[in-house]
Length: 93
Picture 1 (tube, rainbow, N blue to C red):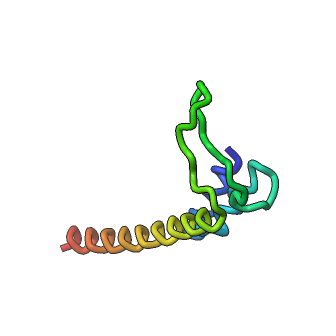
Picture 2 (picture 1 turned 45 degrees about the vertical axis):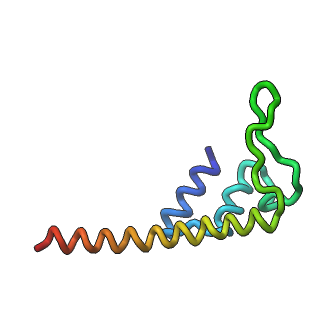
């Protein structure tokens, strides 16, 4: 829960969720600053031990996807600002 609270504070203070923020948030529960996963082999398995999901395995791909997430969130925030401004103009007149 500590990491979620820290993440919430960072986003509220800066208005952004950057790759640097994600690494810092992830460091809290694992108590190290290793950053994103660098070694392949991670899988998620069900109760029977069957692999149900294999996330991206290569470090470069993981960082690239996190950067995409960062930029997508910034674009969304920008679009939401435009919608908010439009809504204000519509309802003021």
